[in-house]
Amino acid sequence: MSEIIVITGLPRSGTSLMMQIIDKTDIPVLSDGKRNKDISNPEGYFELEAVKGIVVNNSFLNDAIGKAIKIVTPLPIYLDLKHKYKVIFMRREMDEILKSQEKMLQKDQLSEREKFKTIYEFHLKKTYRFLTENKISFIDINYNELMRNPEDELTKLISFCNITSEIQTLAQVVKPELYRNRNEVN
Image 1 (spheres, rainbow, N blue to C red):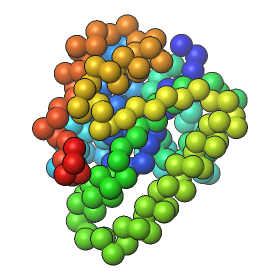
Image 2 (image 1 turned 180 degrees about the horizontal axis):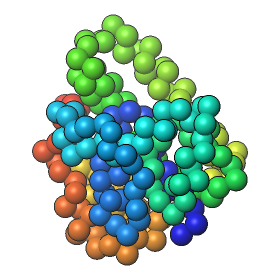
Image 3 (image 1 turned 90 degrees about the vertical axis):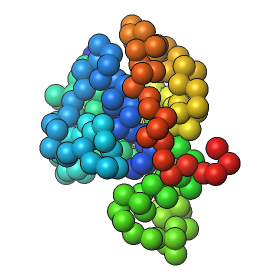
């Protein structure tokens, strides 16, 4: 595999969960373990510290060839286009993302929720436009559906990434008991 698998999505959209799933495949993950597990992500974040500086320096992407790396939205717009990518875009209902983010930050940002919603929607549009304009292959994986019916979303993932792992093995990573901050209608 000569491409880089990029796991992206808004914060709290399931990017860490997708990294955990990919970690159970034959695709190596690129992370440094510097960010510790916590109550918000008890299974870990699977992040690479260098990603935070991608705007100034994206040379770490050279080490990501043939691997999966988490780069949250809107940072994929700083990808080095000399590389080939497959992007797994994690999607989650916006209200759940906002509630989860507020809880993680231990702030009641209800008064600012509309502002953050507008910002996040802008980031999504900007990232999708970048991927489309640069003909970067991507797939949407819906976190809400992944929690309800993992096999359907994992089937899409397996096909997109040519994963040879058994779907049952990957489905074991999905832990509905960690699906918190869900909308009442779900």
